[in-house]
Image 1 (tube, rainbow, N blue to C red):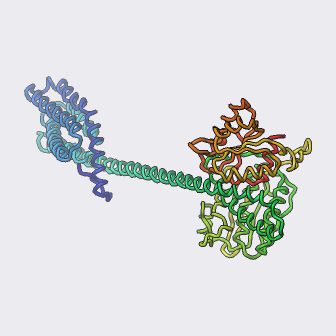
Image 2 (cartoon, rainbow, N blue to C red):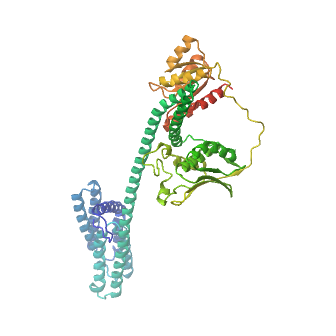
Length: 583
């Protein structure tokens, strides 16, 4: 089934277009079989009394037989499942029968005398021209079929009106010839248009399939990355958690200045690891979509004061000026997430600025515009396109841990999207960077009473705490720390061991602290529930500690309803949370 087109398709594309054209032709031809059989019968009724019955019924038999054979070939073609050899045979036979049908319809101009029966001839011409116009639809898929049929019909008609009649009708013959040329042009346009449409549809389908494949590959990569980060993070958090607890317990045992100096250096190393793992945790929380917004009227000045205290020493160590504009304004947003965004931006500015200053600017214009500007090296346009991507870092081939993992700005971007905060970047190579975010202003909240102040020395003394963790270093370090806080502690590696110890020692805990991931596919939630059931105390306070950053795990912990602390837990944070359980 040759494609008549000026487009340059590949061999595979031509085969595809031919196959689709063939299917469309067969479907369309089947729908016209009834009409092709009906019109000859109608003509016989009209011309029954005008011409010889022998000629009339002979013509009718021939045209109906041809139509039946063509119909049989059509259905047989379907059953052949488009086998190449059989397809070529069907195409050849169909073209021959199309030519025969065209000749039979064309012969009607010789059967009916136009001069003797003008009205009947006009009716005949209407049917002939109607069938020709209807064949354009088939020609749009199989152009050769259209040509063979119509050239056969109108060649005989043209000759009949110009030569075969006693009184030739040259003008009518020329009109028929012009009509044929016009029909061929229309059919060719439709034919090429269908070929182009089929090519576009198939190409789009292929692009969509490729896009879906790439999407799945990206999703699988993201899932693999998340699983890797979760696994690596969990394995790193376990010993680091024990290190934090041991460090806190060790400090009281240090008596010399040298020992305290070494302790401070060791604590800084641990704090650096904490920050790196916290970045991974932030990404995992965003992936798990468990970061919730708690918008409220928050003091910009208070947040900036906290940030100044947090980064002043780091800026001083690098010889940088750290400048903050003062503000007594309030903005309506989540204060914790806002501080996280600003913290990441300021940390990034200090890390990549070697001389000069880092400045936090405030501008009031349809809200509050907060800008973090630095005098660092700045960014090229290409670097600006990638700066918010995960793990993207500049000028850190040695992977200096002080510059983080390259997650800070990625976290900023995702938090801004979550909070619906616009963030912009203006930078020029050699002239520093300026990140800006815009927040809605609001009125200061009305304070009904002063918030109570809690002391770290209260509430923990003589409290009975059950620790469940399958890591012995965590159990030992946490038990030592809790003991220094004047708590009574028992530690177990599983829920069953904890239940045995409770029964043997008659130990009724006031609080349970459990690791989320235990052995034998058990979880801290399972362990807490088992202890609660044993003691028949549904309201027993409990805290989950987890080193997992996998989004699925984070969702499971969030659904449990228990207080969650992410390893490595700072002792001060743990003590504050324990206090609040007993208030």
